[in-house]
Length: 397
Image (cartoon, rainbow, N blue to C red):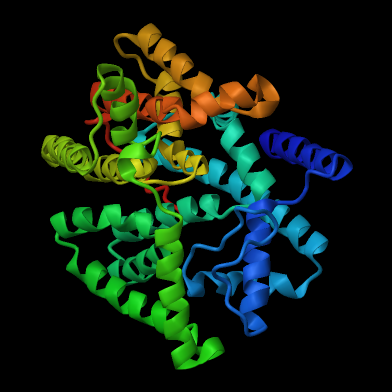
């Protein structure tokens, strides 16, 4: 309760300060709001900037459906409601995630407050940015967690439909599909296919069949228009290698580097799958699943807000530090401090725009994310691989 009250007080104060200083535009939510308004009024949500010059809607038509109710309200009221919906999602997921890890990994509870505080501070910049912009990344991460839980409970039809919805919002989640195929979860894959077909057809209710086809053509064009070469995306593995290894040597690689990077990542993940073969199934599945989720911004071109998706692994790392004994603990904490600098304090209000650009556009944020994943990998195999869960505390609890 203390954690909830502190979060509400800080975020409520931040909301008021944004209002006072006229920084409450909630730019990403403005895009969803205006795009949904345009759609229900019979015009295309694609190809025009909403709110700011970069405010182009780039998601599928069906992803606008949740915003069609909010766009019936005046924008200041709708954006305020959405701000506090995002805030409550952060708070509730923090509590659920910590309780889940306590149950599945056998962590005690006596340092729960410190775990919550440390985890929140580590993610503070990403939380602030999500609240300030009003994006949907926290909801997609919660959806990913629900997907994990449905799979764990063998509710594969429901998991497939949820996965289809996630793909229709962010096709980046396709990174999970080879994993599901490897696990032989064909019922999930079939349900996903049915869900994708339904999601692609559903907007025809509003736009008609021909209008629906045109909308999806415009969606594909919007994705292509606002994409970039993966080898030049600064926080991807390929962009980091190009900027920090090849460029100083007077070299540059394009598609070949992307292919090699993806192949090496696939082989590394295959090693994890084989190593986990004899481990505790629920713990192994959690680690495998959220490693893939956390790797998305390192493998695809995305906004920096997507690095929030390392959240479940960050929670696991800090709970391990608080509750487990392992070798090299000081080194692990030092590595986390190094990752903390570009991962957490990359706010222009703290370090200025020049340093923030170095962190966000110079590849340091991507390096920090990879460092966090490396620490999580080490701690998983050093401390918890053979620990049995204490209870079935999943999302249902």
